[in-house]
Image (cartoon, rainbow, N blue to C red; front, top):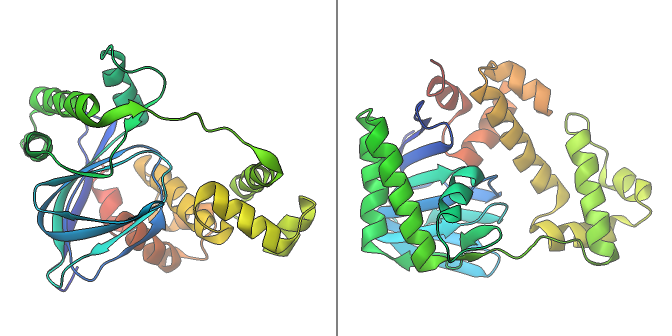
Length: 273
Protein backbone atom coordinates (compact mmCIF):
# COMPACT_ATOMS: atom_id res chain seq x y z
CA UNK A 1 0.00 0.00 0.00
CA UNK A 2 3.04 2.30 0.24
CA UNK A 3 4.32 4.44 3.13
CA UNK A 4 4.99 1.27 5.12
CA UNK A 5 1.26 0.49 5.14
CA UNK A 6 -0.16 -3.00 4.75
CA UNK A 7 -3.52 -4.62 5.35
CA UNK A 8 -5.36 -7.89 5.02
CA UNK A 9 -9.16 -7.87 5.22
CA UNK A 10 -10.52 -11.38 4.93
CA UNK A 11 -13.14 -13.90 5.93
CA UNK A 12 -12.36 -17.31 7.39
CA UNK A 13 -14.56 -19.71 5.36
CA UNK A 14 -15.46 -21.84 8.40
CA UNK A 15 -16.81 -18.78 10.27
CA UNK A 16 -18.95 -16.83 7.76
CA UNK A 17 -20.25 -14.51 10.50
CA UNK A 18 -16.82 -13.02 11.09
CA UNK A 19 -14.58 -10.70 9.07
CA UNK A 20 -10.97 -10.07 10.10
CA UNK A 21 -8.65 -7.15 9.46
CA UNK A 22 -4.99 -6.94 10.41
CA UNK A 23 -3.30 -3.75 9.25
CA UNK A 24 -0.80 -0.96 9.68
CA UNK A 25 -1.91 2.49 8.56
CA UNK A 26 0.16 5.65 8.52
CA UNK A 27 -1.39 8.17 6.15
CA UNK A 28 -4.61 6.32 5.51
CA UNK A 29 -7.63 7.87 7.22
CA UNK A 30 -11.09 6.31 7.31
CA UNK A 31 -13.88 8.78 6.49
CA UNK A 32 -17.11 8.80 8.46
CA UNK A 33 -18.86 5.49 7.99
CA UNK A 34 -20.73 2.81 9.92
CA UNK A 35 -20.93 -0.99 10.00
CA UNK A 36 -23.81 -3.44 9.79
CA UNK A 37 -22.25 -5.42 12.64
CA UNK A 38 -19.85 -4.82 15.51
CA UNK A 39 -16.21 -3.70 15.63
CA UNK A 40 -13.91 -5.36 18.17
CA UNK A 41 -10.26 -4.31 17.76
CA UNK A 42 -7.03 -4.17 19.69
CA UNK A 43 -4.22 -1.77 18.88
CA UNK A 44 -0.86 -3.55 18.76
CA UNK A 45 1.35 -0.52 18.06
CA UNK A 46 1.20 3.25 17.67
CA UNK A 47 -1.91 5.31 18.34
CA UNK A 48 -5.31 5.27 16.64
CA UNK A 49 -7.70 8.21 16.90
CA UNK A 50 -11.36 7.29 16.50
CA UNK A 51 -13.93 10.01 15.90
CA UNK A 52 -17.24 9.01 17.48
CA UNK A 53 -20.51 10.89 18.05
CA UNK A 54 -19.33 11.75 21.56
CA UNK A 55 -15.92 13.02 20.46
CA UNK A 56 -12.46 11.72 19.55
CA UNK A 57 -10.89 8.90 21.57
CA UNK A 58 -7.28 7.69 21.41
CA UNK A 59 -6.27 4.04 21.65
CA UNK A 60 -2.72 2.79 22.18
CA UNK A 61 -1.05 -0.60 22.35
CA UNK A 62 -3.14 -3.05 24.37
CA UNK A 63 -6.30 -0.96 24.27
CA UNK A 64 -9.52 -2.48 22.93
CA UNK A 65 -11.89 -0.51 20.69
CA UNK A 66 -15.60 -1.43 20.75
CA UNK A 67 -18.11 0.03 18.29
CA UNK A 68 -21.76 -0.98 18.03
CA UNK A 69 -23.66 -1.41 14.73
CA UNK A 70 -24.66 1.71 12.78
CA UNK A 71 -22.51 4.03 14.92
CA UNK A 72 -20.87 6.58 12.57
CA UNK A 73 -17.15 6.99 13.15
CA UNK A 74 -13.82 7.96 11.58
CA UNK A 75 -10.31 6.67 12.20
CA UNK A 76 -6.81 7.99 11.62
CA UNK A 77 -3.30 7.82 12.99
CA UNK A 78 -2.68 9.64 16.25
CA UNK A 79 1.11 9.68 15.86
CA UNK A 80 3.47 10.08 12.91
CA UNK A 81 4.34 6.37 12.76
CA UNK A 82 0.67 5.41 12.43
CA UNK A 83 -0.94 2.45 14.13
CA UNK A 84 -1.25 -1.31 13.79
CA UNK A 85 -4.20 -3.32 14.97
CA UNK A 86 -6.06 -6.61 14.85
CA UNK A 87 -9.78 -6.19 14.23
CA UNK A 88 -12.74 -8.55 14.40
CA UNK A 89 -16.02 -7.71 12.69
CA UNK A 90 -18.56 -10.16 14.16
CA UNK A 91 -22.02 -10.11 12.62
CA UNK A 92 -24.97 -9.17 14.79
CA UNK A 93 -26.11 -12.80 14.98
CA UNK A 94 -22.79 -13.82 16.55
CA UNK A 95 -23.04 -11.26 19.35
CA UNK A 96 -26.74 -11.94 19.93
CA UNK A 97 -26.12 -15.70 20.17
CA UNK A 98 -23.37 -15.29 22.75
CA UNK A 99 -25.38 -12.71 24.70
CA UNK A 100 -28.36 -15.08 24.84
CA UNK A 101 -26.25 -17.46 26.93
CA UNK A 102 -25.46 -14.71 29.47
CA UNK A 103 -28.29 -14.35 31.95
CA UNK A 104 -27.38 -10.73 32.71
CA UNK A 105 -28.28 -9.31 29.30
CA UNK A 106 -31.73 -8.68 27.85
CA UNK A 107 -32.78 -7.01 24.65
CA UNK A 108 -30.28 -6.02 21.94
CA UNK A 109 -26.74 -6.48 23.29
CA UNK A 110 -24.00 -3.93 22.81
CA UNK A 111 -20.95 -2.33 24.36
CA UNK A 112 -21.10 0.56 26.81
CA UNK A 113 -17.52 1.80 26.36
CA UNK A 114 -15.64 2.91 23.25
CA UNK A 115 -12.03 2.29 24.32
CA UNK A 116 -10.86 0.29 27.31
CA UNK A 117 -7.63 -1.21 28.62
CA UNK A 118 -8.48 -4.91 28.76
CA UNK A 119 -5.37 -7.14 28.52
CA UNK A 120 -7.37 -10.38 28.48
CA UNK A 121 -9.61 -9.27 25.61
CA UNK A 122 -6.62 -7.89 23.73
CA UNK A 123 -4.85 -11.23 24.01
CA UNK A 124 -7.90 -13.18 22.87
CA UNK A 125 -8.50 -10.96 19.84
CA UNK A 126 -4.94 -11.62 18.68
CA UNK A 127 -5.37 -15.35 19.33
CA UNK A 128 -8.54 -15.44 17.21
CA UNK A 129 -6.52 -14.01 14.32
CA UNK A 130 -3.72 -16.50 14.88
CA UNK A 131 -6.08 -19.50 15.00
CA UNK A 132 -7.90 -18.39 11.83
CA UNK A 133 -4.62 -17.90 9.98
CA UNK A 134 -3.57 -21.41 11.02
CA UNK A 135 -6.87 -22.82 9.72
CA UNK A 136 -7.99 -24.06 13.13
CA UNK A 137 -11.77 -23.70 13.01
CA UNK A 138 -12.40 -25.19 16.47
CA UNK A 139 -9.95 -22.81 18.15
CA UNK A 140 -11.12 -19.79 16.16
CA UNK A 141 -14.77 -20.30 17.05
CA UNK A 142 -14.00 -21.12 20.69
CA UNK A 143 -11.68 -18.14 21.22
CA UNK A 144 -14.11 -15.78 19.51
CA UNK A 145 -16.98 -16.82 21.79
CA UNK A 146 -14.82 -16.58 24.92
CA UNK A 147 -13.62 -13.13 23.87
CA UNK A 148 -17.13 -11.84 23.12
CA UNK A 149 -18.59 -13.30 26.31
CA UNK A 150 -15.89 -11.67 28.43
CA UNK A 151 -16.31 -8.31 26.74
CA UNK A 152 -20.08 -8.41 27.19
CA UNK A 153 -19.75 -9.31 30.86
CA UNK A 154 -17.23 -6.56 31.58
CA UNK A 155 -18.32 -3.85 29.15
CA UNK A 156 -21.72 -4.89 27.82
CA UNK A 157 -25.26 -3.68 28.20
CA UNK A 158 -28.58 -3.42 26.41
CA UNK A 159 -28.68 -1.01 23.48
CA UNK A 160 -31.56 1.47 23.49
CA UNK A 161 -34.29 0.75 20.97
CA UNK A 162 -33.96 2.80 17.79
CA UNK A 163 -37.25 4.64 17.54
CA UNK A 164 -38.27 7.42 15.21
CA UNK A 165 -39.27 10.48 17.22
CA UNK A 166 -40.48 13.79 15.84
CA UNK A 167 -41.15 15.04 12.35
CA UNK A 168 -37.45 15.50 11.56
CA UNK A 169 -36.57 11.92 12.42
CA UNK A 170 -39.50 10.64 10.37
CA UNK A 171 -38.40 12.69 7.35
CA UNK A 172 -34.84 11.39 7.71
CA UNK A 173 -36.06 7.80 7.82
CA UNK A 174 -38.14 8.31 4.68
CA UNK A 175 -35.19 9.96 2.94
CA UNK A 176 -32.97 7.01 3.82
CA UNK A 177 -35.55 4.59 2.41
CA UNK A 178 -35.66 6.53 -0.87
CA UNK A 179 -31.85 6.52 -1.13
CA UNK A 180 -31.71 2.79 -0.45
CA UNK A 181 -34.30 2.13 -3.15
CA UNK A 182 -32.71 4.47 -5.69
CA UNK A 183 -29.07 3.87 -4.80
CA UNK A 184 -27.88 3.59 -8.41
CA UNK A 185 -29.76 6.71 -9.53
CA UNK A 186 -30.41 8.90 -6.47
CA UNK A 187 -32.30 12.19 -6.63
CA UNK A 188 -30.64 15.52 -5.94
CA UNK A 189 -30.99 16.97 -2.45
CA UNK A 190 -33.54 19.47 -3.72
CA UNK A 191 -35.56 16.76 -5.47
CA UNK A 192 -35.42 14.51 -2.43
CA UNK A 193 -36.50 17.30 -0.07
CA UNK A 194 -39.37 18.34 -2.38
CA UNK A 195 -40.65 14.77 -2.60
CA UNK A 196 -40.75 14.66 1.21
CA UNK A 197 -42.40 18.02 1.61
CA UNK A 198 -39.47 19.76 3.29
CA UNK A 199 -36.60 22.10 2.44
CA UNK A 200 -33.05 21.02 1.53
CA UNK A 201 -31.51 22.58 4.66
CA UNK A 202 -34.16 21.08 6.92
CA UNK A 203 -33.53 17.67 5.38
CA UNK A 204 -29.76 18.04 5.83
CA UNK A 205 -30.19 18.86 9.52
CA UNK A 206 -32.69 16.05 10.13
CA UNK A 207 -30.59 13.44 8.34
CA UNK A 208 -27.39 14.42 10.13
CA UNK A 209 -29.18 14.35 13.49
CA UNK A 210 -30.59 10.89 12.78
CA UNK A 211 -27.61 9.17 11.15
CA UNK A 212 -24.56 11.21 12.10
CA UNK A 213 -23.69 12.21 8.55
CA UNK A 214 -25.26 14.11 5.63
CA UNK A 215 -27.19 12.17 2.95
CA UNK A 216 -24.39 12.15 0.35
CA UNK A 217 -21.88 10.75 2.86
CA UNK A 218 -24.37 8.15 4.04
CA UNK A 219 -25.10 7.17 0.42
CA UNK A 220 -21.42 6.61 -0.37
CA UNK A 221 -21.07 4.43 2.72
CA UNK A 222 -24.24 2.52 1.83
CA UNK A 223 -22.98 1.91 -1.70
CA UNK A 224 -19.72 0.51 -0.37
CA UNK A 225 -21.58 -1.75 2.05
CA UNK A 226 -23.76 -3.09 -0.76
CA UNK A 227 -20.70 -3.52 -2.98
CA UNK A 228 -19.12 -5.61 -0.23
CA UNK A 229 -22.12 -7.94 -0.20
CA UNK A 230 -21.87 -8.30 -3.98
CA UNK A 231 -18.15 -9.03 -3.81
CA UNK A 232 -18.80 -11.56 -1.03
CA UNK A 233 -21.09 -13.34 -3.49
CA UNK A 234 -18.40 -13.38 -6.19
CA UNK A 235 -19.57 -10.46 -8.33
CA UNK A 236 -16.74 -8.95 -10.45
CA UNK A 237 -15.52 -5.59 -9.18
CA UNK A 238 -16.51 -3.63 -12.31
CA UNK A 239 -20.03 -5.09 -12.24
CA UNK A 240 -20.43 -4.34 -8.53
CA UNK A 241 -19.34 -0.74 -9.09
CA UNK A 242 -22.03 -0.05 -11.68
CA UNK A 243 -24.71 -1.97 -9.79
CA UNK A 244 -24.41 0.19 -6.67
CA UNK A 245 -24.23 3.46 -8.58
CA UNK A 246 -20.53 4.31 -8.95
CA UNK A 247 -19.58 5.64 -12.37
CA UNK A 248 -16.88 3.03 -12.95
CA UNK A 249 -14.44 0.70 -11.21
CA UNK A 250 -11.87 3.41 -10.30
CA UNK A 251 -14.69 5.37 -8.63
CA UNK A 252 -15.54 2.33 -6.50
CA UNK A 253 -11.84 1.64 -5.86
CA UNK A 254 -11.30 5.09 -4.37
CA UNK A 255 -14.24 5.06 -1.97
CA UNK A 256 -14.02 1.36 -1.12
CA UNK A 257 -10.34 1.62 -0.16
CA UNK A 258 -10.95 4.68 2.00
CA UNK A 259 -13.85 3.08 3.90
CA UNK A 260 -12.88 -0.61 4.06
CA UNK A 261 -9.13 -0.17 4.26
CA UNK A 262 -8.19 -2.39 1.30
CA UNK A 263 -8.94 -2.16 -2.45
CA UNK A 264 -12.03 -4.05 -3.68
CA UNK A 265 -9.92 -6.41 -5.81
CA UNK A 266 -7.90 -7.52 -2.79
CA UNK A 267 -11.09 -7.79 -0.74
CA UNK A 268 -12.73 -10.04 -3.35
CA UNK A 269 -9.67 -12.26 -3.75
CA UNK A 270 -9.79 -13.09 -0.03
CA UNK A 271 -13.34 -14.34 -0.53
CA UNK A 272 -12.90 -16.32 -3.75
CA UNK A 273 -12.78 -20.09 -3.10
